[in-house]
Image (cartoon, rainbow, N blue to C red; front, side, top):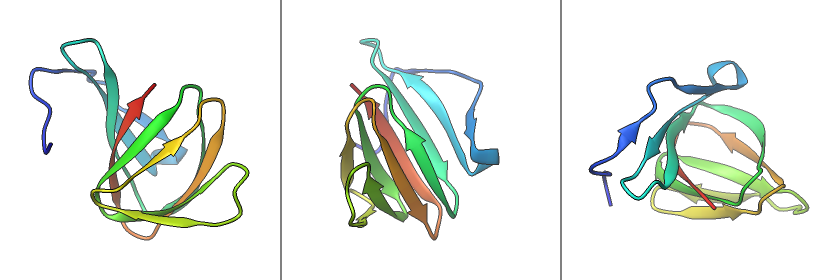
Length: 103
């Protein structure tokens, strides 16, 4: 799906790591929340509360989940799962556009 219809958008952006990651929260008609954002070229570590699915919609990244030793590459149309109460490292050499699905 290339777009979400009939959603509410939280106007204030979520800005992390001095602007290296910026997203907006969208709320679907059924109450489901997602974030849609961009990570600029950088290497960052994110902590999770709830489980997440990171869906790539543009660009590419390298990801290493907590407890893993190998980096994996993900691009447009690919996704990766992050357990709740965990973390992941992400490295981007180009802007990486994503949708984060929670739960």
